[in-house]
Length: 173
Image (cartoon, rainbow, N blue to C red):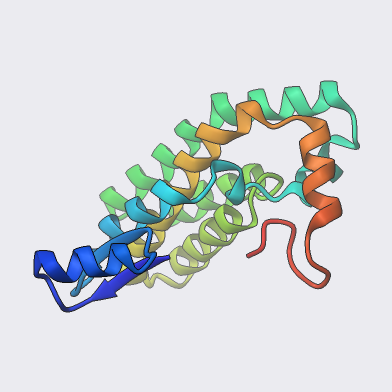
């Protein structure tokens, strides 16, 4: 739990942390600071969509390892392509890059897949003003995926899928 407050005194921070808050941010909230604070406390596998990844590998440990390896190798370049297209203001390339990224990342993370899809839609509509916040979200989720995907085992995926609450997505999002 992260406290979001307009109160910026040291005593206020100490009181929030003493009350059980895990983090503390002062309003107005900076998106980068918020995502950094979330990443400090969220386990890296939280962003991995266990059910989709398990289905993608068909329950086969060798295929899972190949998928994890492909993500570790190709995800950074795919995100960089999206960021570069946005920086250049090239809506057509941004749409194509986001589409490719979505295809890759949707089998790993519904959160990252949603962000990539929203970027693709924005680029297709020529409405790029909302893209910066989506890029911040995408970068945070991508960093978390890259940090956590290497250690995920087939057994862990199966356990995550089996214990998720009914009616929720496999990553809780």
